[in-house]
Amino acid sequence: MIAIAFAASLSTPLYAQVLSPPAETAAAIGGKKILIKYSSPRMHGRKIMGGLVPFGQVWRTGADSATSMSTEANLDIGGLKVPKGNYTIYTVPQANEWTLIVSRELGQWGTEYHKNMDLGRVKMGVKTLAAPVENFKLEVSSQGANNGLLTMTWEKTQASIPITVAP
Image (tube, rainbow, N blue to C red; front, side, top):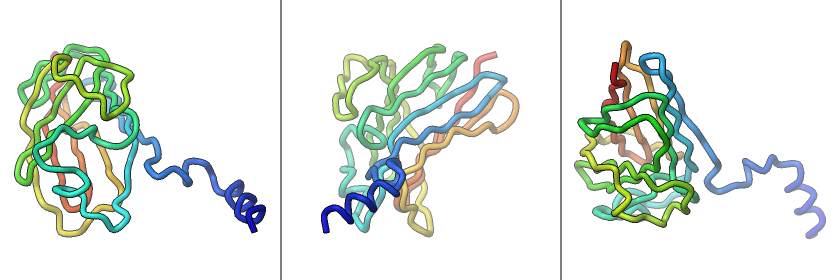
């Protein structure tokens, strides 16, 4: 019986066996690439916002390793000036507003957050979705010219913030 289960697991790709598979999103905004790498957890019937992801506490914004962001350009993320380079992203979810944290610390496990490494914090808009989204999803999208949008979606919550590439 164990041998049959093991053999079956070999036929399933490793990424399909991972509870929170690696994911990434990238966009060229103003001709410059912005790349975010994260792990994408699943709902699996659980209450997410205000449950698994507590309100008012720093969240790793995904699962496993800390969520990383690299940018080829200087950015303005909702009023926060972010020089080109590499960063870690955290959030503080609330029912009606999220806070995006951009950290200078790199390479840490997702739950290792050090406030003294913050580049800065900025508020994100939040809306409630009509239907639940099973897989946590981060998306960077171009909105034309030097403008973009960073969106985070999970369960029935969508948080977003505008991004502008400095000319």
